[in-house]
Length: 471
Image 1 (cartoon, rainbow, N blue to C red):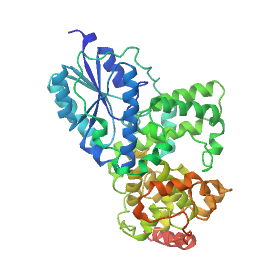
Image 2: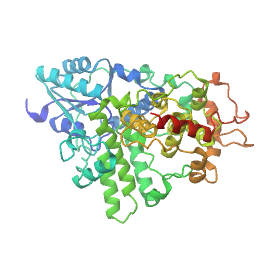
Image 3: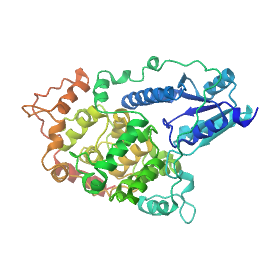
Image 4: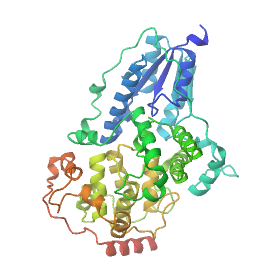
């Protein structure tokens, strides 16, 4: 059998796209392609919103492949068992997939690659989830970077590999293996009634990602630096969930941004720097995987955070009932859209970990359940950055004041009014959507009275500073 007639399995992970997909391109170059997504046990460990968003992405990819004459094959089970079964059923001789960098994925990848090669198959993992793979960026002494600024200075001159085009030809196999039904997996069931709310505020798939990118370059890019922190303004690309599921690659974003700059668009350096920040999070996760669950910095395990998630104050934070306007608006935006503006994330996280003295792991777990753009590296690093226990962390004395932050980044209080209904005679649909997305058992009503702050801003700051100083 010649190389040109080898049937390959494209094992889909977090690369649900056709453009700039090294694994798909390698498979298509050999012959027929079987696109395969495996619902592994760890998929069930995903939070409610990420699982819902994964279902949307799989639906979009299935339709996209159908238009190309292919099918998305769905199987549930352990990766190696499923891959061997599909190989047996189809006669495939090669498996290609995109690398992931969390410790569980790395372990699975190594085992799968070794086992399939021992079976006599071609088994290859490929880059494409980052601008630069974590193992390729090193300090002058061969160590990993622990601070973003020098990391950014190191990768800027390296250049980024040009994104690959969509394969010109995608051939189907001689016979398709059986596929399970996506709806039978009930990925969206944990969202309950909140699923219909999320659906009104998000779009999935490669075409949607490129439409966002085009809109950003046409309408927002030139003002990105000034607008990105204005929480009531659509000043960002809104691509975070598309990146999380690989519906667009960071290399494509980088190349498109560079081309736009060359054509005269100004102000993209801060935007591209955020793509570099995502690389940095994965760089750190690769080299210090304990950051996903434990304090990154030494000496923080004895810090007097509470980790009791049953406390009333934690419930109030999760449901936007802290009595602090910026925090409550942010938490309700999360319920309704599955996302939260980055400035709001910092403020909400700071209030929880500093004013309320609640462990960052409580917030990290909640975001992991609620975010449609959940990324383990970004989530853990972001929380530890704010809390003070992480790499490149905000100094312990940086305690965000939610009121002054709101005045600075939402001076007309449009963001607050968009998400908090209480006190408004005619609340907007976005604010009312919150009550449709939460469990009825929460017992909340738009006619309720706004609570007083559960922790006063001055009191909380002083308590936090005292705890940090005695650490």
